Length: 91
Image 1 (cartoon, rainbow, N blue to C red):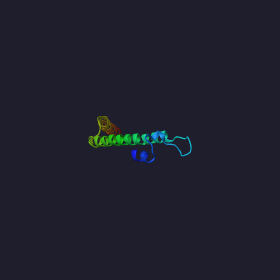
Image 2 (image 1 turned 90 degrees about the vertical axis):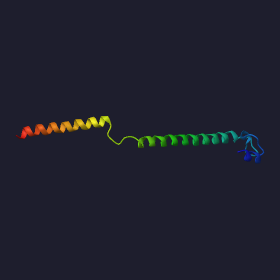
Image 3 (image 1 turned 180 degrees about the horizontal axis):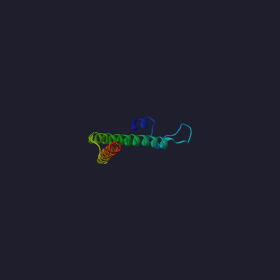
Image 4 (image 1 turned 135 degrees about the horizontal axis):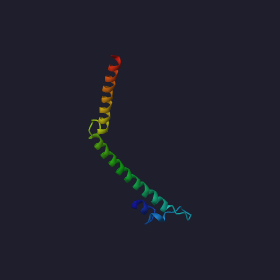
């Protein structure tokens, strides 16, 4: 930014004005540049956090969770019980 300000004969960005008017756009331009820098930094932080989360998810065990395992056991027991009842009805 400093070389551009020196070309415009300015020491501070807030001194920028449209030629021949009193409209100062330097503060607005300064805030836009600050916003872009902060937004880019936050983007990089979020991207880094997401990449760490993906690595953690890849390392997770492939087997069913304890809740899923319990539901599978209940389902199997119900199947056994229904087969037993069905055999009694047929005989």
